Structures are given as C-alpha cells and as structure tokens.
Length: 208
Image (cartoon, rainbow, N blue to C red):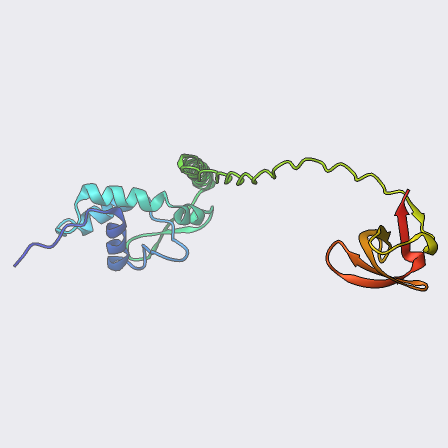
C-alpha cells in the first residue's frame, strides 16, 4: 500500500480538520470559539495520522484562529467547544478584547498591504497626443489692386457711330463693346466677349 500524501498547506490541513471534526471546525459561516488547549487534544487524536504532522497542525491552527471569521466569534460569555462540539469553558472579556485588538491589527495590515500593492502597479502611460497635422499654408496671394473706377458719361445718340467703342450697362458692371448698327433709339453692340446684343441708347456710355 502506498503511503498517504502528507498535507503541507494550512488551507488543506484546516479542510481536513473540518472533515474529521465537523462539530468543532468549519470552513464557512460562523466559527465556534475553540477550547483552550485544543492543540494538545488534536495532537493526541491525530497522533497516528500520517497525513498531518504536528508542525503543520500547529501552523494551520494558528492560521485558523487568526482569521477574521474566527476572531469575530470570540465574544464574552460564548461557550468554547472541544473536538466533538461539547461545550467547555466560556470566553472571558479579556479574551474578547484581545481578539478585537488582533482583528484591528490584522485589518490595518491588510489595508496597508493593499495600498502598497496598488502603489506598485505600473501606471498606464499617458496617451500621447497625436501631433496635429500641419495644415498646408495657403500661398500668399498678392492683393489685387482695386481697379480704378471707370468714369462714364451718357452718350448722345446723335454722336454715336458704327465702329465706335462704347461702354454698355447691361448688368452691375459696364462692359466694353463696339457699335455695329444704329436703329433709331436702339443700338446693336458686339461685346468684347463676342456676344452681340441690342440695347436702348440710354444704356450706352462713353468714357469720360
């Protein structure tokens, strides 16, 4: 027969104790205050148990009684239990104060450890802002000099002749054109852009 595997972790030893002595040890819920001198009882009961050594047993028991769940159970007047769940001595006020002090210290250590762990975490590098793409600079355009305003004077129909260059007001801006035909009050003009149009004489002007 192969030798039973020895338990080396406190967690596994406590689970084994809860299995062997369910009325004394527990893994969940409220813990029960243990009888003073419980280690000697355990050592005697498990003397021939090859799975648990005395050293591992002592370490696991210390781990169990230092847990927050167990320290919360230490209240003055509560009955302690032996391995079989039988009531033994009562928890004294002195024991309760000691348990509360141990609980306070344990919580403070846990908070400090968590704080140090968070401080040790590498901070996420700040996202670098993408350099703004330099906008292509618009080529500087030479400011156009304002065209000198044309000074025009109304043309008398009697003084107009075919082939004469005139200014025709057919829109906002006067356009240069050449008279191609005169017909009473109408004047046929060919504009510089090639278009030919007929306008009234009052639309014809001469440069002053």
